[in-house]
Length: 70
Image (tube, rainbow, N blue to C red):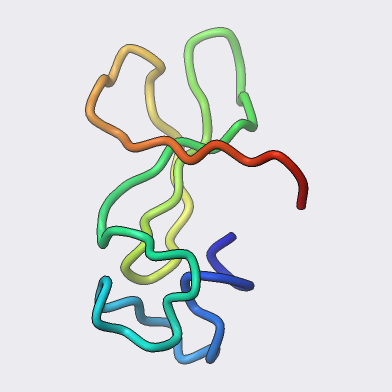
C-alpha cells in the first residue's frame, strides 16, 4: 500500500492529502500491518516515509486500513 498507493511516484515521501502521488488518501501517520511478528507484537508502517517497525499489540493509537482485494 505504501509503494503502490501512498508513494506512487517513488520519491519516498507522503505529504498527506495534498500530495498528488498519495493515491490512497493516506494520513501522514502510523498504520498497523496485518502481519503478526509474535503473540505480543505486529508490524506497523509509517506513511510519511515508508519506515516499517515492530510494535506491541497493546499500543492502541495506530490507524488501520481495510483491504478487500489487492
